[in-house]
Image (cartoon, rainbow, N blue to C red; front, side, top):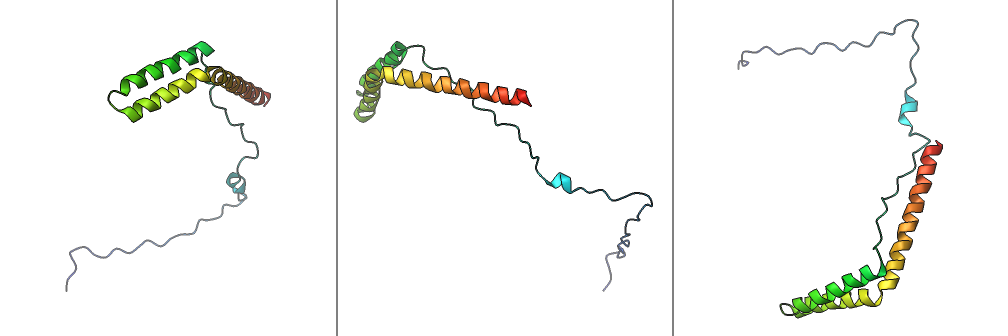
Length: 120
């Protein structure tokens, strides 16, 4: 049997790195440790609440009207829209108050985060 024309190459011997006199080894273990001080996590951007209770009620009325129109094509889907619209009309004040409270909390969290970042 003959080889395919190429001679087998020998791997070059691996040389150990030579120690240079006068230099000390560097301890790299500090790079393996996570930073002890972490930046505070940025809160979500605040989402604007509805403009008024009337705006929430108007969306509910619109959903109910669309639901009645959809009832012509699909009664179950239309009734779902009517139910959601009626709920929004009935609970417009509560929905609005909850949205405003959530917005104020998000603003407070954002201000606290800014204070914490600027303190460092």
